[in-house]
Image 1 (cartoon, rainbow, N blue to C red):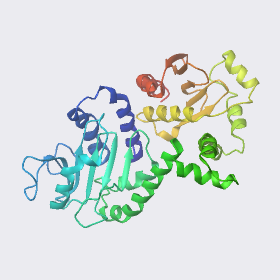
Image 2 (tube, rainbow, N blue to C red; image 1 turned 60 degrees about the vertical axis):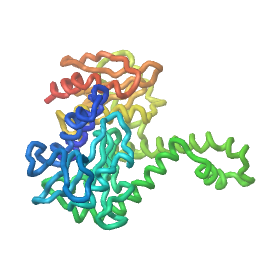
Image 3 (tube, one colour; image 1 turned 90 degrees about the vertical axis):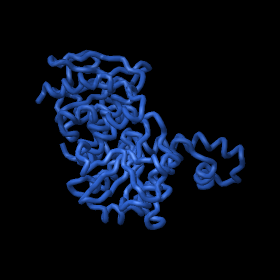
Image 4 (tube, rainbow, N blue to C red; image 1 turned 180 degrees about the vertical axis):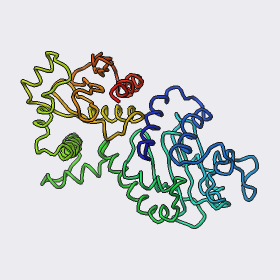
Length: 363
């Protein structure tokens, strides 16, 4: 697997095992050590590459240690401080990193709970760790634009200078993106006022602000949905996503009555963000068996299909999300579908083994 595929595989593992991880030690063993070894490429059992419970003698309080120090070319380059997976990552947890950053040659510090990784350097003052990270990696929602920068810290292509040079831009772009994301989820008064004042000619009073708040939220959600559908149209090479999805469903996975109904009536297909999120979860699960690019999707009126190699004869799963009770359809070796009820998208991971088995049967 290439770098991105290994990252997706680790993300799938984290989602699948998250509920059973209770302690910091378990977090290290299950999530963080695999990140150091499979993603960054360092041998966690070689003390010349990875030093657990790292201690520096100068200027550090006795008894305090950093969980891991990564050594490259004989020098400590990266410091890692760990927290248990169910504990939020906060800068208040980084006191050891601050002190050790000043007395070692390390230019990169990582604070993590195994799911969220915050990367720090010394942009604001030399040899003093910044208060804000320049890169934030969330394994529950991987930002693909960060993957090339993360790869520069891996053993095989370690390029510290390039990472530091890009850190300033990454830091501010990342902060801006997180602010925008927060506004889409829960807009503050300034955000509401900004858009209201551009479409409403009167004074933006409290009553007007209350009137426009749900409108701004709804417009933001529709805008995101339009952007997602636009990308899908481009990927499919068609101007009409719904028409393409209906035509591609013509060679349906089975001859069930509901499939025939979909083919006869192909109006009203709407690909939802929830279906796309479910598709990404399925793809993350099965990327341990095949390259993610081989896992594709097609939408129909009553289900959302996940296929191998964009082939109707190679169904991996069906997502039945157009109803109050959601189901994920699992296929056996004879391509017979069994619908498993789920209450949240995370429950798709409960069927990871069956999904991988389905893919493996086509290889």
